[in-house]
Image (tube, rainbow, N blue to C red; front, side, top):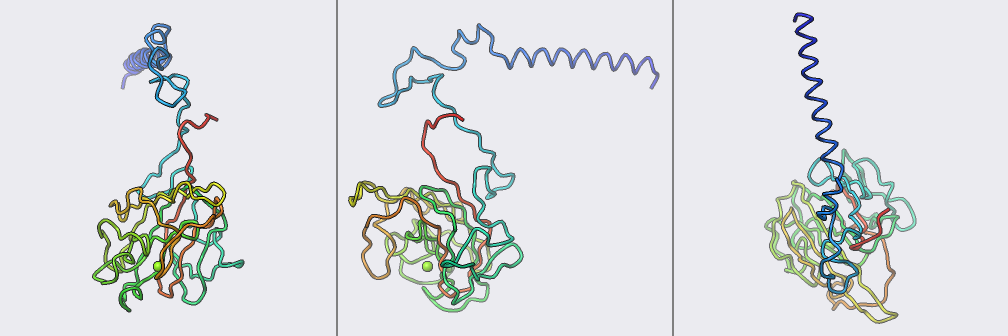
Length: 279
Ligand code: MG
């Protein structure tokens, strides 16, 4: 290209760029006119019932920023990654290190080595867990690929082969064990990865008195199977569940039911409430 043409072209680009910059600057900065037109909220609106905020209140705290994962099922920026495919550093078995086997991007239950619990303790939380049934199918009913995700070490979301595996309804995969079967069964065959996304609200006590039960919401392979369902109490086998005072937070536990179930991509987020102060 001729040097004069290049210069003219560059000048034209510069002009366009300059005018764009001015336009962006004007667009990003609220002008006095915009403020007067209530661009950022209103104070002359009704009060929201039971809240210290007007409808569209400009002073209401804004939600903090969380960066979502680049891929579906990935951990967002405020999650605690409990297993990223490499080691069991976040876990214990009793007071010692867990003896479950870590493979290529997953870990697997080793029969006879006990449950695995997180070192950290949690109350209200969102949990993402991926699990896989052994591809070589053995056993029946509760003996086929049994494990479990225990919220606060007490409330079991059952892990079991969900594929053509007759068992009692409240013991099926994704059941709140012994209490509520899943609403539907979206389970995949053995050897395929399955996904639980769980929202758990811890029970609340006033002294010894239960004032709010635990509430459990579960998506199983993206399908809703429990919708803010109250638990009857911590999980029991062959007995009625009931509440007793418990700690505010406790470990997430994975059950060793002596079947070689695999897990991967486990993360957890502590849940806050609405209108928390901006930092
Ligand atoms: Mg189980």
